[in-house]
Image 1 (cartoon, rainbow, N blue to C red):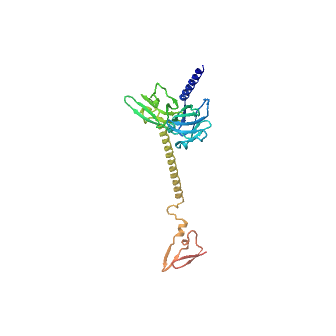
Image 2: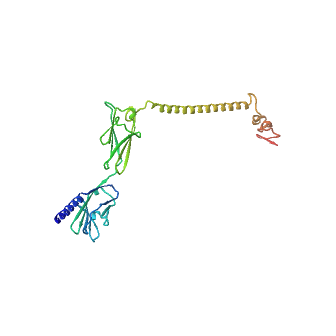
Image 3: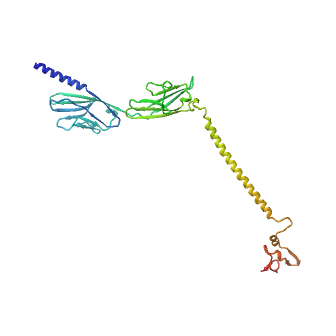
Length: 319
């Protein structure tokens, strides 16, 4: 009976070790983000812990020996922190090299070992997508759009048109939805298509306009109406400006004619001579040799003289 109990204990211990060795956690982290790795250890230790080690693949990250400070190996020292209190690992900034299989080994002073493992997957954000357009006009107008990204873990693609979900029986998509194909293009197929790409890290989008630049079918039957209205508006503006200019010219000519008529009214009749003109003319009568009698009436411009004085070659007056 004692042998049976011992055998049962040994068998259970071996089975527990196998289960612990097979116990694996799946953890997902994001590129350039921190992550905390820890294992839940439910084992009741029958003796004190002697050593603990963390490895990724065959590369050792941390080694902890009882009564000594934990040792983080140089290549991880700048970006990894180990907490011996709960046997956990903190990675400050994930890189793609951190992705892999982590093995945690705990050995007791009695020689017993327990194993745990973590599979870490590092997700990369999807980059800005790019849409390429392929056009086939024969035998029928056909459009193919391909949405691609350069980087990103497990990208998921989807499409909408004019902010509405696409009808699947009218639009053919590839298996992973990154490609959209439309045959027998009609006017209703023209518009703005949006490709969405996402994963657990982020979500991005890209728009593509399909217009008359790609297919004549995109020309709307009433597309000439805006052009017509624009042309009429321009002609109306030009006509109004022409009328305003003509009216101004006509008014200017009328004003010139009025001024011309007023000038004619102020001019003396033929044969008449104004008083100012009379005063401006000097009539010299050379009857006394070198002496000239000057009619004083014609010596002053604008007013008749009061007392003329005869002078040789000159005419002056005393007022």
